[in-house]
Image (cartoon, rainbow, N blue to C red):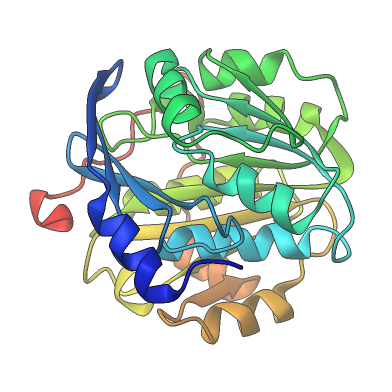
Length: 290
């Protein structure tokens, strides 16, 4: 018989935080007192991932739930898929895919080898999950994936809370397209704040390489009122905009999906990003993590 909720809380409260230097800074694994074997990963104080080892289908972070909707909608329910994760964190989304789509095959590309070692030791993956982890740069690792292999490529890469410049360009997206099957999809976690120049540029860049683009963010981010996350989904086939909209609107932190003309109007003629002009995403203000 499983533990009661109260006993699970006590076991979590008794767990101690794990603090360890990794290549990208100081990593902290903080136990979640509300969930028995759940942990939050922070790097230099910035929250990166939340993992519940007893319930990998649970997604605590708002942006990860939105990426979870993309995973749910990229293929019929339960069908195994092939996924490339650029950026590993605590492997939250790979665990989610393995839990919701058994027999899926996944590749995680996470350049921080010390972080990978920490997560493998403290938050071990299901040994039966078909998940391979490579400790190399995201673009380098993507280059090693066979052409047309992936149903889904997810980019969630941050260094010092900023997306590296070489993962924001058309040349990067050309490599994403090479890896995707013709009906495959690309999803990215983007972060920006007023005046949203980075987000507009990333939408324009995706639209230059994919026939369909949709973006979900909360109203405060869309209005340029605060710094926050936006999840972009792109493909060369029609996107499940209606169902994505319904799921995001019913979330505990509702998100609004923009697509088509409204998204083009928002982009406002932003310049497409190439390797020659690419810059990292803006750093979040210190108040974001307080």
